[in-house]
Image (cartoon, rainbow, N blue to C red; front, side, top):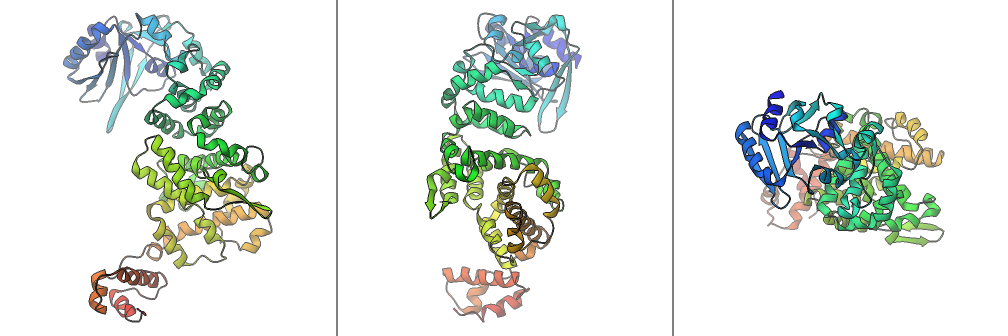
Length: 498
């Protein structure tokens, strides 16, 4: 889109493209906005003139820092104009977070601007035909891009903005880059500063990190350098809890393995549930939410750990865990809906194990399960899959996955192969529950045949909790195949002992 490049040159010939747009363009990756920097005295007038020339909306984003946004109406091109942070361009680039973000390119050099419109979103942008000699690089940012390295600009960047520590891992996950050793050591030194960052900003970075397929490896690195439990101090007690059961690293080791399995599951639904992958896909779209549930699912195990005889037990850790998770999520400014869902997933994640303690899972048992869990049922089953799969190695998991769709093995059969058999049987339980949910929905979520008014009129009863109990009895009768019509339901309630 050369016309846009020319308009920008005509209005702000002394300005520079900076930061993410330059780095992303060197990587041949599109960016969601066009970042431009120029002297503070020129920003407001430049924004208004661009708005006029491009027939775009213009907003002042930050009066103190001198940031304005211009958004075109047709293609939704987002242009952010920001004043130099410092006396000039060099000072601005030197104070930025990482070297690969400390690059600039003159607007006057007229790069080719390629715009890709996106439905219901801002257009994506790419600068092409960049001339290497025109790139302004005081910090070795070009070399960092070529080496796929994230390197701190100076030792003070995390003190200036502690969120940059988390941004380093998020960027590594999104770009497939490596964080330099000196940057990791700086994070280890400054990790406690993350507590100064606003919860909503941490939430935003975690969302982006957890959206990638490299969240697990970066989460482990965050833990190694102190950042993970600086963000989630509630997890620190897991590190030495139940080492006799989980090995070195205790419950935290298990937690990270469950996170790992959740990441694998969300990326490979067809391998885990070949028959139901397409039906499960809509439920599994919010990857960051499911990964957060995995990270917090055993948060209360240290607080509930108790030795009973020769066994270590964690009574009611799921219930307490749901409450503790709510506190964490409130701190990170999660929505009430997300907190409810994660709380239900954590608070009920032992339910499938309880069902698996029987050799037969009846339609009635499945009905009660899906009735009680509601919208959290399917998400919680995915969490359980990640939990169960964490107890076997990668090779063992590959070996048992093809058998997960076979008829559920008995408890006795599972016990013959110890841990692997127990995991396989539990995964088969999940497959069976999905089969009931997707293939025979009328048995696990029966449509109501009669109303409370029908019950009161037929039995001459006043409004009371008893009406709900009668309707529940009718639903169970439907599940068991005893009634299938309104007439049969009305006849059935007359046989009940009230």
